[in-house]
Length: 475
Ligand code: 5AD
Ligand code: SF4
Image 1 (tube, rainbow, N blue to C red):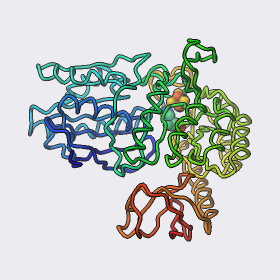
Image 2: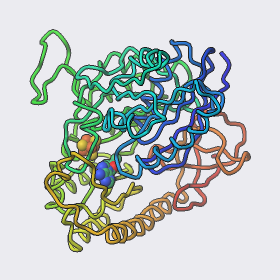
Image 3: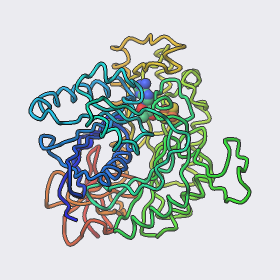
C-alpha cells in the first residue's frame, strides 16, 4: 500500500504544535481527521482510522476533498473546547461547497455535551463518545439516511484490544499503545472521569503482542498510555484481590517488564504516572532494564497540601517529595516532568509560593503549566468557588513558567559534554542537514545527518544547548 495521505494532530493538553503525520491509503470514500488534546486522543484516532478503513474510507489531508470530516476533541480546559468550536466554523463553507459532506465530533466534547452539541452546532451531523467508535459505520449510515446520529454510551469493558490501530506516526519509529481507558480518580478539577468513563485495563497479552508486532515492523519505541498507568491491573480488584484464580494477575510494574523483554532494542516509555499510586516496584523495574527510559511524568498540580486535598489528589506535598526521593535514589539518571495548575479555588499567594518552593526542590526537567479552568459537573465546580481572578491566575502562571524556564535550561546545561544514546527519529524540523531523536531522558537531541537512518541508535556527544534542545555530534 502506498504511503500518501496525512492527518493533522493538534496538541492542546500538551500545548504542542500542530503536526502532520502520514497514514496509509486504503481506497474508497475520503476521511479527513483532526485530533486535539492528549496522547490518548491521538492513539484513539489511530483506532478510528482502523475502524473506518475497514468500512472503505481512505484518509486525506485535504479537507476539501473529504466525504467525512471528524474532529477528535478535548474538553480538559475551556479554551480547548473553544478552539474546536472555532475550527468547526471553517467547515461551514466546505459544506456549502459539498452539501453531502458529513461532519462528526468525536471524543471528550461529544461525551460531555451530548445532544446539546448537535443543537448548538447545526453543522455537526454526528457525535461519538470515546467508547462508541465501533459504532461509527452505523452512525455514518444513519446520517446518510438524513438524520443526525449520536452514540455517547460509555462502557465498563471496551478497550479496543482487538483493533489493530492504523499507525499515524510520521517516523515509523515511535508508537503509542493504549493499556487502559477511563479514570476513577476524580481529581476535583478534572472532567476526564466524566468524558472517558470508568477505568478499565486491557488484556496484557494483547498489549505485549502489539509491542512485538510493532518491533517486527521496525518501530523502536513504544509509549504505554493510560490516565493513571500505576493503577493498571489485570485480574485484580481495586483492593488488590484476585478475581479469577485460573488467570495470572498483572500489575503495571510486571506489564512494563514484559514489554521491555520484547527486545532490548525496543525502548519503552509510559504516561501518565500518579504520585499516589507509583510504587518502588515500578522504579526497580525501570532500573533493571536499560530499554525502559529514564523518564517519569509525575504531575504534582500544586505544592500545597491543603490545595492538594481540595483537588482530591490523594497525596500531600511530603508524600510527593518522598516519591521524588525514591526516583532519585533508585534511578539516579531519571528525568522528571510534571503538570501544574495555578489559581485553583481559594489558592492564596502563600500557597502559590509553596508550588514555587516545591519546584525549587525538585528542579523539573520539563513541565506543562496551566491556569485553572472551571469545568462543568466536576467536584470543584459543585463544591468550591472559582474565586482567584483570572488576571491573578495568569500572573501566577507567568511566575511558574519563568522559574521552569530556568530549571529546563539548567537541566540541558548539565548535559553539556556528556554522551547519550539517541534513537534517531528523522530529519530535524529546522534543517535537512540535521537529524533529531530523543535520549532516554526524553530530551530532544539534534546532530549532523551523516550516514544514519530513522530507527538507528546513535551515540551523541552534547556540545551546545537551548532551553528546549540539545545539540551535539556523533561519536
Ligand atoms: N484546569 C486547568 N488544568 C487542568 N488540567 C486538568 N484539568 C484542568 C482544569 N480544569 C491539567 C492537569 C492535568 C493536565 C492533563 O491538564 O494539570 O494533569
Ligand atoms: Fe483527571 Fe486526575 Fe484522572 Fe488525571 S488522574 S485524568 S487529572 S481525574
